[in-house]
Image (cartoon, rainbow, N blue to C red; front, side):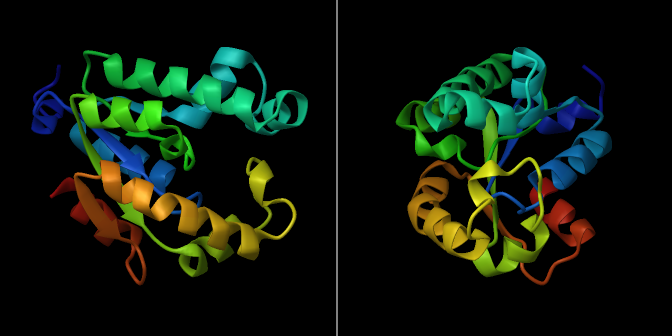
Length: 174
């Protein structure tokens, strides 16, 4: 482990939040700053299956995707090498995943931005199949379902509204 990644204190840094909240962007920057690996669960799912998230949803359905998502998340936090992990926005939906997050040797940070904050960021996102029909209504529904679940597993909450990427990064790394 590099001396910079030791600033994670031997723990993973796991970022959670709605799609479009900046988990991947902030995660990459945090990993670079800390000198440790960056893992994005959506990318890991695509590597593991050889298919896109969209294809898994279309061909196998959301339950199959959530099963793979849970396996990938558990594997990521089980790694002994401290990493920055961007968890898929819906990872908190399954109780099993919330237990994994609570029990992991990890600091879980919720990038908190409601539907109105993330709506413009996610329009036209080809890899977000759940937002195909009515993104605004779906984001509001996601928020109402997921907000208490994010709160349940978060060790820290970082608001993203009105903040630059740099400001969010600095808040996450505090």
